[in-house]
Length: 245
Length: 263
Image: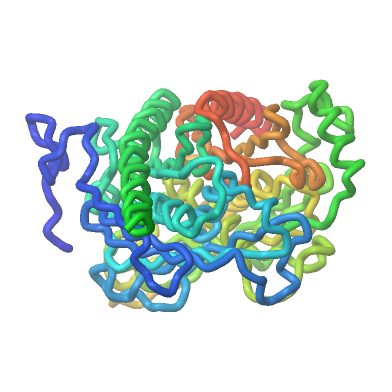
């Protein structure tokens, strides 16, 4: 990755992959694709390819981690060694530990976890290919997988990033923009509740730019949300047809 | 990161906050007393201890030589580690760092890194081969809430206190000379955490308030009033309006503290 592009945004205002400032990358969502898992989802967001499997609600192991009044959510965000340019060691890095935590906290408010006391669910996220914005794509897919597992939810959680590239606020940063850009602001959101469940930022932004980036990311989230709902509906439509036959 | 809190205590704290005050008499946007000591560990190149009420965090800075990262051959290296030392709270246990200490270290790291606080270009001995590595070790000595703000403050205070040994390079060999120069710094970020309890925003929670808080958001603010890092945490959420509000609170409080510390 030594050939650095000279300009991340050209004179026409188009980005390296030809997108406009407020345009999302291509998106493909699937649910219920892992036979063994209670719920599963797959996302292709740009070049990101991420698989999520959910197990549970089931008894917690070790038992002392269970809570008397609620279901515990455990999340493991993990990158495959071949998912990035330089092989990543399969041992969990500090980054992966932190992301597992913030992803779990972004999903937590969406689940009625008081309905299943003393149990737990495991959300396993495997990044098969990474291209910037994996935490956001992971959240979008993880929330679908939880819904696919049939766990009652207040809303789906959907995530998308915005950021500053050169002097512009743009939506949905890809790898080069993330690495060479000025700032990155990943946001997770529950549209029906107007609730931001994950917000991080690195880089330098003025307060106005930060607000603009959050607003833009939320708009991106709403677009992805429509696709999330669609893929779930399609799945249940197929189930319904299967039952009727 | 927390021990149990009784339901009656929970209600008591929440109801007081609901009225716009707190059990220790503070207003929602008042900080506890802040005390700052620098240079208390002589063997470290830099050190600082911050008291935030009963919260106590010590940061030591060590400087060693090492290799630069392949993608940044012309920059020194910064690394932050945090230890939730078992003597600091009944809930801390010895062992490898858990997700709480890793998150704490990474929030402190991001505030310093993204504000370009350390002038890493000046830490190069031989480009691509040898650079200075700045080790920032956060040591929590007593946990009474708001470790993020205390640790971030102590880390920057320790960096401001850090002295680099004078050196010269002869035939690729590093020679330490007598005397010291201050570590080259370009910025002094201040991190302010805002927590949400029953839809009310407040700052500098002590440990019990932290336990009933639904969510927190930490913002690192530089001297220009710009934001250089954000981290939301906790199992709850913020509305977009609350984020704007929290950002304003954090910037105001950072300015206030900057004036007080004369940074």
